[in-house]
Length: 296
View 1: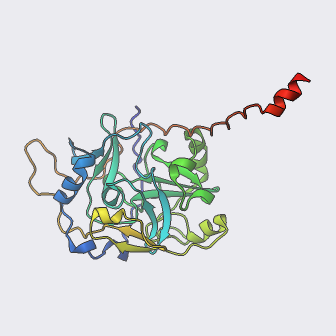
View 2: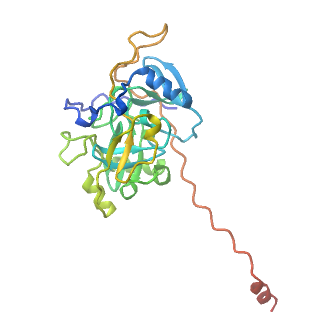
């Protein structure tokens, strides 16, 4: 594994938090560290990584798995929303940050601010790309200092409502696409129109799709389980309680505080395996007529 280089210069200007980040609690419950700890424990394990403290990692994933990979993007009132049926998606894609560790693989650090997704974006040359934000990183970074294997690219025409795993471009193609795209941060950080949390401008995606995109309503679900129920047409479900407490102020002996400073990626994740080509159709068994013609 190669250690990612640190890019010292980034653009992180102050801006008002989008109104959608201050949502009323789904079901009225407050969001605390133990909420994450208890609800995610059945699907993975919590490990202590200095200087970040307790981080969570999913278990039983395929070797090419990565955050924001098994699911799809949809356009909503709050911008580009990541939809996934993974049982822990409500937390790990809409709160907190991800980092890659050479020993443990992908690890998630809890956070207490909701978003439709916490990713950095790139757009251009007919492609959309995104990478999970690591601890301390903000949406407004213009040049996001992570290895190319953090990034996932798909053609713009396959960006909305299509399973990413079925349309992502290969690692060699991603290396070629990356320099042809531009950062796509939120409004106020570039001249082109931008969604609230960044990403490709909706009109540009509509032009590639050849159809308009009506924004789906983000409906507050009372529980994480309710968030996985199939939504009504024109809506997406989201369990998004408001963060009411930071991680516990006291930590067990030997544990680092859970609120770290900005840090560079710890290692470079492996590239996803290329998609297998479709299997050829089975050969047609010879018919009786074929046998008779062969004997003539």
